[in-house]
Length: 62
Image: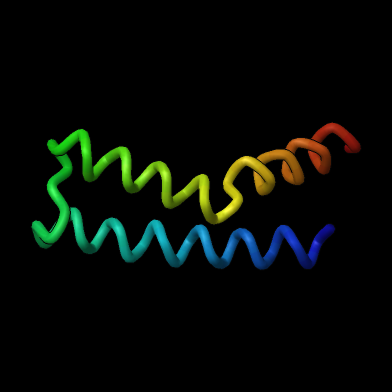
């Protein structure tokens, strides 16, 4: 599970970093519901829910 979490974390972090750059530079509009929805869809597509599930399981096991 640790390997899966690491891969998911890396992919999510890269996506967030790239998206932040696009929002800051104006390539994507932070005020656009469509752009924001696409951002959230992208996060979910990268396995955000699975990542959170893994993290929660690790926290609960402590």
